[in-house]
Length: 367
Ligand SMILES: *Cc1c(COP(=O)(O)O)cnc(C)c1O
Picture 1 (cartoon, rainbow, N blue to C red):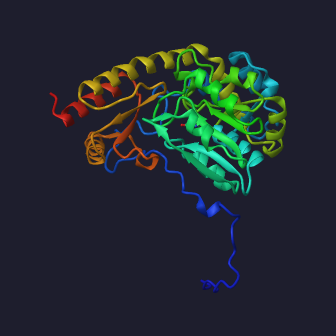
Picture 2 (picture 1 turned 120 degrees about the vertical axis):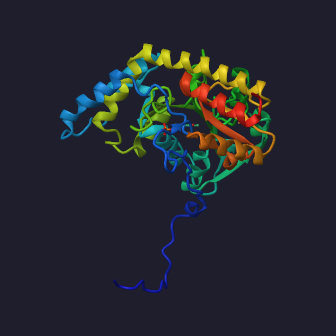
Picture 3 (picture 1 turned 90 degrees about the horizontal axis):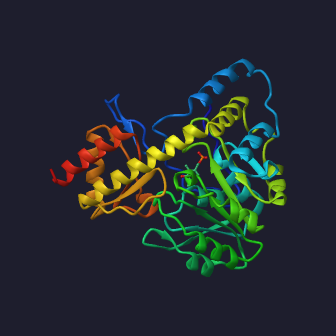
């Protein structure tokens, strides 16, 4: 083995890269257990639509063919189901990639990107990767504060990132506040509305109507959550033609595979499966929340497919996490999101929710 030569001229990455704190994903394994109940990554407990699974399997016969580069079939399906213009849609490898297109295209060294106190950890990662500075704005009681965001805007601000509903809090910014936010932003600052959980908030369009009203709003969506395709990596964005035209220039032409596009198109067209998942989620989310509140565990109303359980202290949250692990249940610790006394719990099926309630009731000594 040749020995490492002493480094005389250090090889340096671009500015910002070494500021990136690596993304921490939900735990998926517990030593010595095969029956783990994974409620740590907001995955769909019902899996993907059987039609999406069939489309994925059928794609196996075409793996030697390059995929199309314009995603026309998938964009047409998304446009049809959501009532949007397919020419104003862009698809990516998860919505994470669409968020990356936006940051790479519109922010660079010296620029500022606004995120919020408990905001999704990908936003600062993407800002640093572009050499920009993430600016974190305080929230109020786990809710995004529109006025605080507007006060943080400077001449260097290029992008504001908001997830609505938000992760990991599950809270939402009201429609009127969203309008107030966009109306108060300079016209050259892009507001990104990350709608990863939009389908779980009844009657919410994810921000599509705001995109139609204001030229500087971009909505992102994903197939990872309600469509149960997190393992396949597909997301999309909706914006003005002029913005989509920019984002398409940094997108690799073959970013989505044949199988990704086929499965996603079948998933978005399976409206009854989507509706089933949303209905079940809402039912068990409310049931779980009420049960926790009755045990004395704090819990804001959630509009997503998880709840944020709030304990008296970080120590109690850690102890509850261990009690759940002892029963084979994995949830998400969110100290990294400045919520050390909380645990984020994905809404599973009925059996999963009843198991959570049982373990936490024993933990709190209320039965
Ligand atoms: C899960 C999630 C996404 C989706 O990411 P994908 O890359 O589409 O899997 C985006 N934003 C937030 C806030 C999320 O929680």
